[in-house]
Length: 216
Image 1: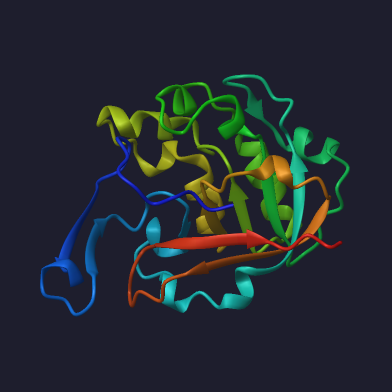
Image 2: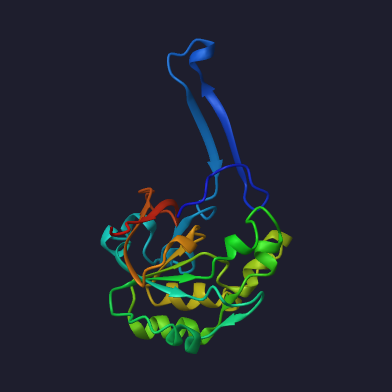
């Protein structure tokens, strides 16, 4: 469920070799430069709000647990996902759950293309309020959850007030897990789920390895 970390037009990324066993070794070692909010990553509240919880302060218990899979893959391009849409999935979401909002956007458009961003469904304010009212601890998305995120790669950084989910969910203390992939493989309504960040002291986010365990 984790995107490969590699050169990508959407995010700054570079990798150099610091030392190599082919040139005197004894070990190979690379240096990677990237933002903490690229590829599959986790947003704690400090991403949007000063003085709030940083990534190293997020208990792993908030990133591990039962995930409820809300299948919105039938949503068309540029469609708004509302609270009623989430309710109509019929999946019982309980306090303390992790919610995965599944659109399978990565199957419709490659993340390597601009179309992934410009044709994605997006979350309405009512959807954010629905998640808050359910008392979930984290929400994971396989698409750009705020409509205005499509403006980032054009160099236009919107105000927080325009980034609906960032403002609502992070403001409510709900952790965001962004840009998971391969959600088409999640056919269950409920699954054990893990999102493991680096323990970066004082950071506003971290790349993460995200996975689910399917029961046989």
